[in-house]
Image 1 (cartoon, rainbow, N blue to C red):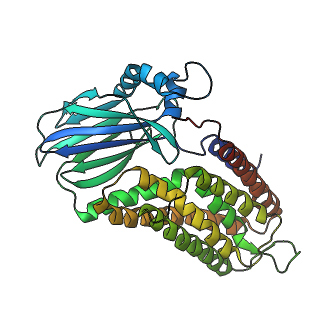
Image 2: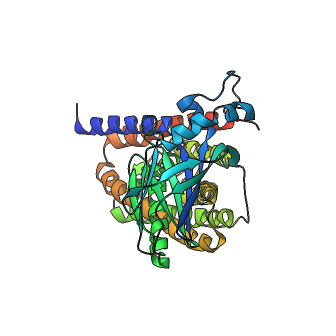
Image 3: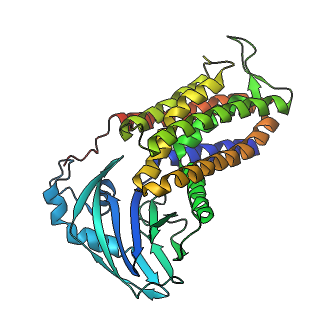
Length: 380
């Protein structure tokens, strides 16, 4: 088996894994430190809890308030066993309050009010968090943490990749807060499989061109040709999603999550199919801009669901958006030189460009069907 064939098989395995985890499982953990005392709130998706411990008692596909309330003690115990908070090296006791329900952009969530029994927190105290929720069930699960200390909020992403994190409780500077949001943006693009596949669909043909309508794809003769084409495409995508990310985060424009996620999947399908049956020969940057507007609403869902205070929104928006761009640039920097090196062979044209685009389109089509015909909706 050749090295190139192995690369293609690895790509197929990666995309197959992405198809199974197209929409990351998230919980939202908000911890607040005020006057030396800790309290919090933990929002966990009902669909994830149902998968883990089974909430739908009658098996009718809908979780009622009665079913949820009847299992509250089990939900609280399951969650509390997977969260350990320590202050200055001493483990805090964790008490879960009465069952509540809230709705995020992607569905209904169980809301667990938290009271933490800890030593009094001082300005030099350190809080450590060990987070293992759903670690044994879903390696892609994330706990989106919003830690507020005397009115100043910082964020972090918890999960199997980084289950133990520590924070100094002194007030974070503006720069430190921005760096937290920047890191979140980078991580979000790297685990956002639909965004990655859309970007790859745009990058695959960049090391070649269609000389005219109806002609076959031809490799470029110079790296600069591919570089400037990628620059136009990535810039258009960046400008577009920055616009809608800002509008959605500032709550100037809001769209239902199901519509946004379905439109994102459709954009991946169309971008991939355009590589095989090109409708846009020289205007791919316009395609990137148009669909980038949709992807921006998808990026905004993370910031919106964190429930950040108004004072932190602009800083979060700036840091998160820069992080997304840096994450994109890393993908481009890794992909473009390799694609340019392989561009002249039949392997690239047939296996990578056409085969890869078909595979991307098939994965995204499966997402589209799942998102349009969502049968996991839970009415309350």
